[in-house]
Length: 226
Ligand SMILES: O=C(O)c1ccccc1N[C@@H]1O[C@H](COP(=O)(O)O)[C@@H](O)[C@H]1O
Image (cartoon, helix red, strand yellow):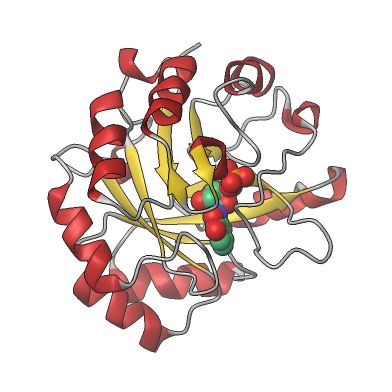
């Protein structure tokens, strides 16, 4: 089963090109200042303008206030906002209305009790990113290279497009897709040679393993950047 790929946390022109040439469907810009993948809005703007048409540009924020989001959205030509913090369904609604952009809400999963939050956001967000919950004491709320037990969502379906994330890499992504039925996958640290340093060969290997090259069609027109 093929899946579309999001390469998240790109900070260089080389990584943008590698992702595009490999056939990624989404590029993620990380606006969380404490991340080693942080891209300040002017840099993200330059990189977004380098990206070929057809790749959706996603802006990742964590519990960002309107003033911060205003600056990002005014500076960077984004297609989707990824809310990677503790944003409530009401906040998701607000962000969608304020910026007129599709919102992908991230839900961290560690056990069966975390799945209800997916249902709570599925009627509000345009897309759900099912990620591993950050381990206790982690500095980052995501990007920790940690996977959750994929069997928790095996066979689950939601009335909204969704993406799988958390500890994916070129070696395990095919198995993750097979087990969960994910049609979209997101990776950050699994295609890096060091925190924040994307590796072209790993990006290619990941996209190939996910079968992305064979299918770049979006699962719903809300996330089609064209
Ligand atoms: O990557 C980061 O530094 C990051 C910081 C803050 C929030 C989210 C972050 N990354 C996102 O986490 C998932 C999974 O990452 P990984 O593949 O396990 O490294 C992904 O969506 C990243 O975009």
